[in-house]
Length: 149
Image (cartoon, rainbow, N blue to C red):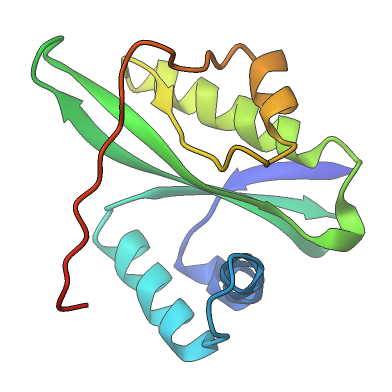
């Protein structure tokens, strides 16, 4: 049975390896110590909300969302920044459960919605669209990168 719950500091032991695997998937160097510190700060400072998926006793996936605010609509909005399911647990519907939990949370918070970005080649686009995420065809997204980092 797959269970979804909001992660707390007590979940770090199980969450850190998943988060590290997620970063390695995106071609970042493995760094369990930094991953633990980063997640501990997000949770302790209430800067993000993380939902974890467990299959039995095993942590098998997570999603992390960050609150932001829209000046135009004068409402909160959430960025779904991370979504990861361990390779051995893919195909079980875990990503769907995590995304639906994030959507429920956003509704409960009175958020305008969830926004996410993904690479054009990411096959998860089909999942996002099936769960009512709409691809933005109207706005361009720009990013400035700090040259000193």
